[in-house]
Image 1: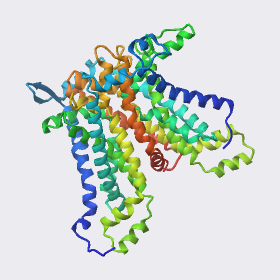
Image 2: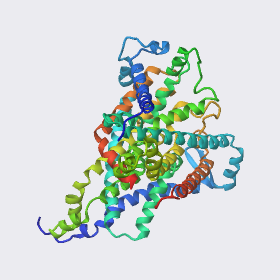
Image 3: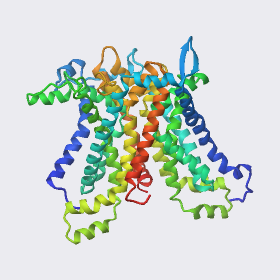
Image 4: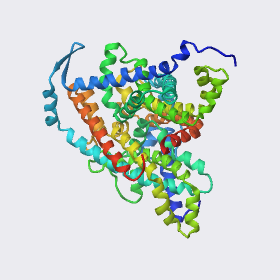
Length: 296
Length: 272
């Protein structure tokens, strides 16, 4: 290779390589977020396509008390995140350990299991809506074989949230599986072998060797998944749009309605800021909790 | 490792059936006439009517949606990959002060946690001012923003695997810094580029909440189109099934080819 003197482009390489991404962040994430803060203390009115802004933090604050959908949305989101993520962790972990012990077709099984992550969430919502259908859905068909049902899976307030959680579990167990499977496969085999030579049974190896070693990966999977679960929007929008009543109203759906159905930008922004603070504080707490045992 | 117990075999078989079953059921229904769906028949005469209606009927916008999605997903992936890789390399290779590198990484983490729907409101207002509302450019910009954090993390993990000696040797041999990056380092991290590219593309292809609110009829993407089939006044269940299948195929094809790179990328990134 011919020797070239370091030109201007080369000397400034560290800067122009960093700059474009930073510009994108400032313009499209930092600025909108500051905008959101501004919006949260203002009221917006659209008149003839022109927006009128007035500084009025109290008006938005007052909406908190008057918004009947807010409480159910928060309660549902907490139930949704807690139940769905717990189920996904439990099933995903069991699946990762089981598949790692399979001797043949391991790759094929992995490929099949991760299929649901690839499907557009909207298509998942649409698929499950057909399967949950009261008149011809596959679930009620199965129930009728045993002389049971039919159940109004999405239309009955007693079952709707559980039905939505079920879809989420189907969608996201593969994700937990993928992370934990990689972790199980990466475990030091000599430790496991040593335990086995010392006479440990399979269940003991799992309980006392595999699970403790998997702890960091489980913590990572939990954190990632919890973040995503808080954001859930697409499937529920398709399945129930929050109904019946407010039975499956999640916080993201509620935000969408405040912003784009009620056009209440000021209150929507204040609610958004509140949600962001909730998510961040949840993560700080869970991070402290999960990092207790291991080195960061 | 050891063998599976009976219980584990049943668990595994049950899980596989639960994962694959819904796909098969929807696939089956997408080949039915509407009337066969209503009767819940399992034996029927297969037809391509639903696919024809979804793709070629005059009322359907689906081919238009497909084209928009291809454009948005491809361009946003290329841009996110370019910006993300450069940024990751700069952060990894050059001595930035703690304020710069720490600040950027902390912001990425914070931004990643924020529910997208909270930003759609401000984006909507900003884009209306800039004339980017209801354009594919606007949608591309938002998808680039969302995909950048993942791209940067993934590429930083891959850059960390490249021995520093390789670059130093290249520079001793007369390479400039840019040449050391493009000719020596970049070829080594191609698996990372593929992994990040696949993940960006699939994310952009599947993204719904932003597209729903920042596009209208002419600029709508596939997920918005799929949702439309479920929201029409008179729901066409067979078309819903067919549209879901069509929407799913590209992501699965791409992941099929990129799978081993993605799995490696996730392991590099998360287990560390």
